[in-house]
Image 1 (tube, rainbow, N blue to C red):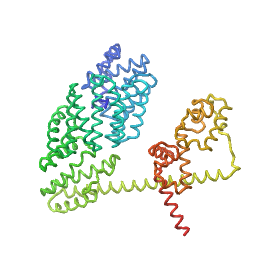
Image 2: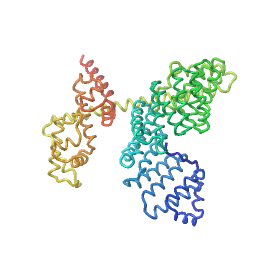
Image 3: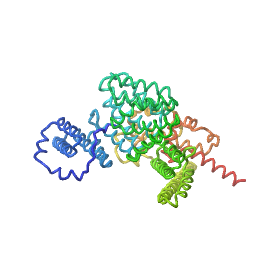
Image 4: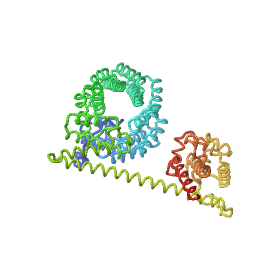
Length: 580
């Protein structure tokens, strides 16, 4: 990510330093912003000096009331908190955003939204992270098209590496690829971004098991990084092709590529790809039946995990191998150790909602592991104190499984409550419609704020909106605020403002909510409609895709349409049984 100058220090250590040499700091404020910025980054290994320079930068910005300079100063402080306090770093990034809004700066607040998204990803808040990436994307599109495609790459990385949405990520990477192809993509300005995109495409194809396309883009990336002398990235392509050859079962070719790449990963301190290299060496040696060497490489994967506490579902297959390996040589203590580690990693990945159920393998699902673990513990009971540790871990796993089951139970209960609320609201709405004497009060008189539109025009547009709703004009999939305002013989700004004020929604949310409400009522009444696929229902109610329909339905009701339909079917069956 973009935050590549990070420092680990305690803020407590800074307090005595902040009072040091006030005269020196006053002199520093006479320097230009560029000079202070350079001094800050030239001292990346000395956070005490950095805080001095950033304080001078901020003092100068406040004295001159320069908002964009205040934003950059807060950005520097956020960098200093990167490894120490993520929440404080986010707080300073929020200040960056506040001071840089509407400045048309080339990088802020877009970069601040990106960095904030990166912190949120580390906290496994993927929805909030994507929201911030999307804000960065919108701003960058207006202020800096080059940076817009950098943001698009970040979104692609998140979809690919964190969310497992490989097809969506691939589409984004190809969009970026087409953009960089129009640029001088071998210059210092674009070369690294272009080659990163090529890697993203290759890696997505690898995850999708499209090995031929993976090879094509790995070769292209190797060629481009060789031409531009990007040594570190060149060997990442070599490593990725080695992993790809493992998938093809060309194990000797894979070993040659990975062994060429591994020293470079270590040289450049690329921990993530070093782990990947050892993992795929393990798979390759396992493929040619060299179990002892495979085990040594998987142990190195485990060593990196033990040090960093970071691992993804892609790299956990080494643990089942180690469990079987030590079982085959009769080392029950190590077998027990790696069963425990494997179960703990399973628990962590489930807790963080990443790749749910991906860890449940054919042989090594959790019940099987628990049973095997109990057997090993029993055999070691008389002469090994690890028995007690094993029981503790076993209880921890059982507790974790119980908590997860309790969570699922509460989730189902919550969804059922939301379903019942929908049914109650629908009944209330029907009663209101069946009662012609119900009091109708013009929405205009509830709104006291002057929105800059004549009251007569507001009334006229609200009446047209009522007619539009009764006629179900919202079911047209191509409805937009522009064509509806044209139909109403008004302008889109007036229509947008009236919808925002009198419907308390954005125009898109207003249309989507009407569609969802219509879908709910029709699904309740029409059992045939409940047999439709989600895609067909989406088209029926004006949406362009199953995904957009599901998202709008969940946002409005708190449950997915598939769950709603199932509950309706269960309710219908229950009524039939009672009637009989």
